[in-house]
Image (cartoon, one colour):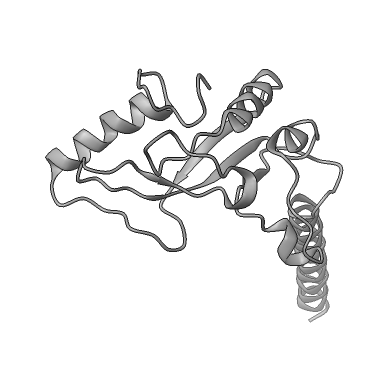
Length: 176
């Protein structure tokens, strides 16, 4: 009887130790996960920032957002997304509709397409600082979509020429 009591006591002790170790491992994992997901204001890894819709003014008592290049001078924000190219006008009859809130209001002559050389200079500055600058297509509301693949391909060519590596007489951000 004594042997079985000792064996059962050892089994209980081993189970208790295993339970405590399991609990300790779980707690350690929880602490590591909590630290991994903790917001650190001093960290700027892969932070994406939207710019162009004056959202700063929504929460800051009507103040306007800063010019794009001022955000690029800050360490926070590795990727800046210009918002928005909100009207595709993929019919080929009208230029795309670019909306950067109050950041750019001038248009090309005889056109509704915005011409924003100051934003183009800011994009170049941001890129020199190692920031990625993207253009958001679409937006919360807008007129966009394609009726068929041919229209989508034609529009892709237009975007390439106006905003990326192609050539166009109307490049909203000039050479950026």
